Length: 357
Image 1 (cartoon, rainbow, N blue to C red):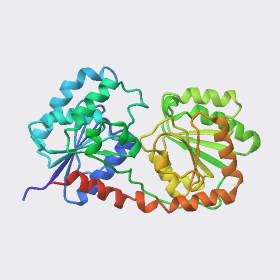
Image 2 (cartoon, one colour):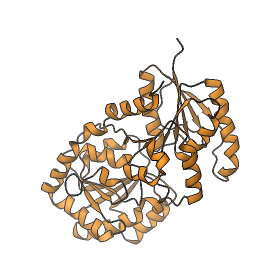
Image 3 (cartoon, one colour):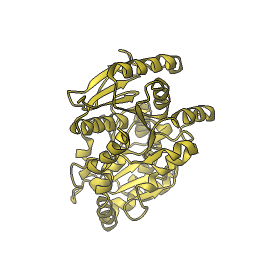
Image 4 (cartoon, one colour):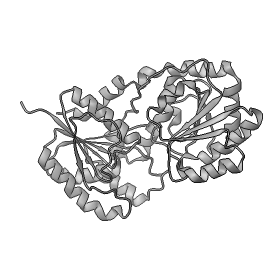
């Protein structure tokens, strides 16, 4: 009997949410006896951890940054070529853009194809025509995985009809420490247009006036790092805000923090927020669409209005100063672990992707 095979199609396997999820899915399918094949279309770099038996295909040996539209037909042909060569039992395409190309490449093969959506097109400024076209094409797949119901409801009825909400799987390595240092944390890309780290720094400035020995640890890198370093210096906070850059296994540090902040305008589903939240770090998040499917404000975390630095500052002060509140939120957050566990979520992925095989 021929061994079953899954083909996973991604843009890049550099550090990030998609590469982490792809790694977890590939490990789970391997344990189930599948051969794992992965195509990356934008970048040959593989930074996430994958089992040594994974077969990788890279569309190019160079990172593709500009004029991606000109690669459209070549990408479709390349995906079709790998489908012909590998003859997978099922296909998982990460994002609607990649999914629409995969549907066209898979047209003659009729291999079971599932698409995973990771963005909200309205919030990310994707034009209506592109959204209409990708929705129309993706509705001809066998199923769509949405991270949140908010994300699902943005798309067409045809896509919703074949869609299923499956949140991200989370690995909890440690429990938050009761003897925390006077630090709060941000983890993510340093990109203000989405992540609003500049607003977080402004809010921290206000909180630091009340609590002078408070520190902000920023983990991650991105195009706005120097701007944020300059902003920190201008506010005379260089001794209180530490830029750590990208750090392996940053979740090992979560246990020490008094609070974790997600200041984004939008997210698919924030992996760093989930990891900190389930570790038991008291979490503060902006009210990005979908966060209420994770955090219940005042019960297992705090949610503030996007862009409101005063409100964020007050929440930081509350969690750092009020041990009883912090412990209450932490205890309630940990009760959600089973709902987001690797075992629970990856089982849902497996059953949805392979159904019908």
